[in-house]
Length: 322
Image (cartoon, rainbow, N blue to C red; front, side, top):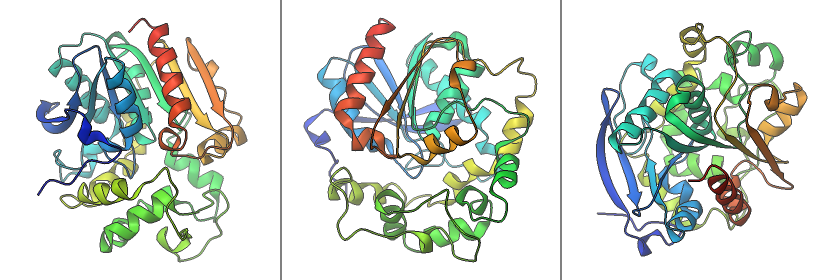
């Protein structure tokens, strides 16, 4: 039985295709017939997390391609943990560009999809016409891998990315997928202010009495359906490959993203606060960048501030003449 699509997307001719890419198959939601824009979701999201952007882009004559990323929904989920390093995830995107006959594509990512988008533009600049990132900046390769850096910075404090290295993390999330998704997507959790202790991520989240308006019930019901096949282990495997990705990119000469780039962030997003705390300056690592910050927005920026995000995306697409 097909679940109704959230965000009014049933009003559009959304088609689903299974496409081969990089040795696996991805399930892809697509609609429209104009210039394609590839939208990459993050964790714990699904293709429909882009609902407000999909509607906006279709109404303006674009073709939207929103894959269920490796390990999600009806896309393939390899058993090997090492199959989820970001070099492979970027290669998945290049394979999608090939499937749509795009010598140069426009890709926009959110959260982990943002990290994949940055890596794709960094590793395959000749294939990217423009790259957009929502919520997670381009940190570059760094002097050490991300996990090692976080362990050093967080000390004994609890941090979910470190917790996600353990099998117990995905086992806990799988026990009640509805509760897990609603907790992460709608609950309150101070990521940077956690004390040490045995409590897992879900036990540290405070749920609101009602979900915020930007996480409507039809979306929360729909996204649970996307986690029934694979559960949370494959998505958490994305977090378990920081060192492998760092090793596999050792031959890169520098951290610079050279293609036209756009970064959108909310002032209440923990990644924004973290980037400020370490003095990150993305302009040093992107040669053609525009950064826009919206006040009083959190991590789910495309859903929290859709009009603002859509306007910035439209300006970026016009700038790169797409």
